Amino acid sequence: MKKVLLAFVALFVLNLGCKKISDVDRLCACSPISNVPYLSLVIKNNNGGDLLSATTAGAFAKEQIQLYRKDANGEIKQLEFRLRPPFAYGTNQLFNYSQLVSMEIALSAKSINDTFYLKLGDNQLYELNLKVNEMKIEKLLINQQEAPLENSTTGNAYVGTIFSMKL
Image (tube, rainbow, N blue to C red; front, side):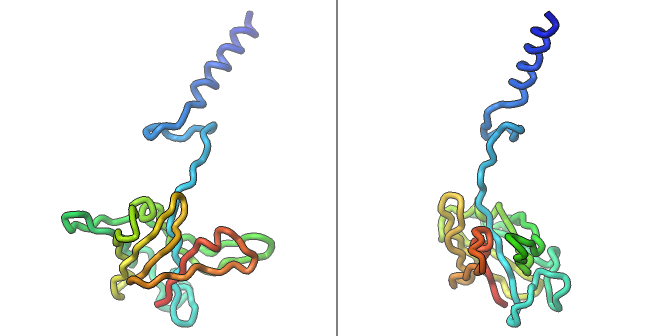
């Protein structure tokens, strides 16, 4: 009798722990992870130096960077972003640049005509336009000029989604 009762309790706990995903529920351990598009941008100086790294002269700290959009009334809405440090991938491969990463900008971009703004310190204001197709940013325009993608010597899929900007 104890074994049957214990089995029912275990099934009850498992049933409560694994629920289906809906828009309001948080993920549980049994839920699949969905891919969310995000912008990943490297900012370089004319010499190819990383302007998001504290070790580079003239680099920008997170507090000096603003990423925002304007709503229909012209009010500024700040967009969340983070700075991702350089990382290793593959066998002895290193991506040497920090990246500005934002999911919110990719989720907010409904068409290539939606304009976002990037302000780096006291430098000029840059207009950003994104073309998002399902779960990937296909194109990034910076001041109406197409931004190049970073090249991976090993064909790494993630590195091939990082955009680059030179000041």
